[in-house]
Length: 290
Image (cartoon, rainbow, N blue to C red; front, side):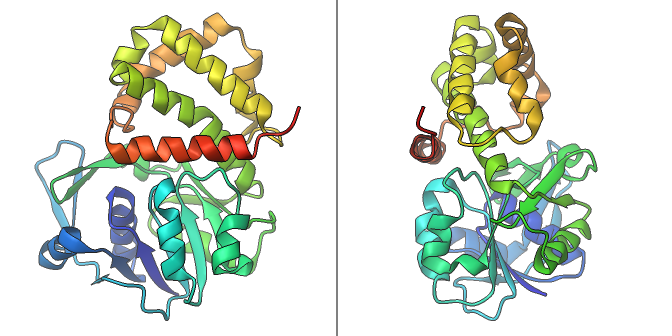
C-alpha cells in the first residue's frame, strides 16, 4: 500500500516517521519552510525534553501528485476545506485523522463518498523549532487506542488493511463502528475544555478557578444532551449523571496533571482558536432539535 501523509505538523510528522520506520512506502506532504527543513534533515523526533534527536528520512513531496492507495490527512479542522480541493481530483482512499464533528457527508460531497474514512490520532506533542517532541507513553502504548472507522459503521477489507498498517508501527489502531458519534462526543467534551483553558490562561490557571470549571462542565453537559446519538465511548455519559461536585473535583485534578500540561491546552495560537470556533459551529449545526 502506497501512502501519503498530508500535513507535516506534529502528528503528520510523527506518524509518517513511524510508518517509514515500519517499512511502509510513505511520503509526507509539506510546503514552505517546513518542506525545506524536512529535505535537509528529515523528520526530527525527540521524546519530551530529551536532548537526543532521532532523524528519520521520510520522503517528502510538495503536492499530492496521485498514485496513492491511501492519503492520511493530519490538519486542523478549519484547514480541511483547502485540503479537500487538492484531493478532489485524485484517486485512492482518504482517512481524515483530526477533530471533526460535521460527519462524513461534507467530505464525501467534495472528494466522493466512497473514498472517506474517519479517525482520530492517539498521539500529541509540540514543535520545538523543526523537532517534534512527543510523549512516548502516549504514542506507543497499547492502552490508548486509535479509532478508525467507515462512515456507515461497516468493518470492510480496506478498514482492516488500514488498521493493520498502523498497528505495524506499534500504535493500537482499532476499527470503530460508531466513528462519527465518537468524534462528536470528543468535540462535545474537548471544545468547552479548550475554550475554558484558553480563557483562563492555561490548564493550571483553570484548575484554580472552580467556578470556571463548573461553567465548563455545564457546557459539556449541554453539548452531550444536544447530540443526536448516545455518546461514544459510553463512559462520557457519566458527565451528565455523576454529581457536579465530584466531576468538578475530578476535572480540576486532571487540569493539574502532566497529561493536561502536555495536551496542548496551553496553546493560545490563532490556529487553535480558529479550530475551536469551527468545531463549535459544527456541534451547533448537528445538535438535535429538542
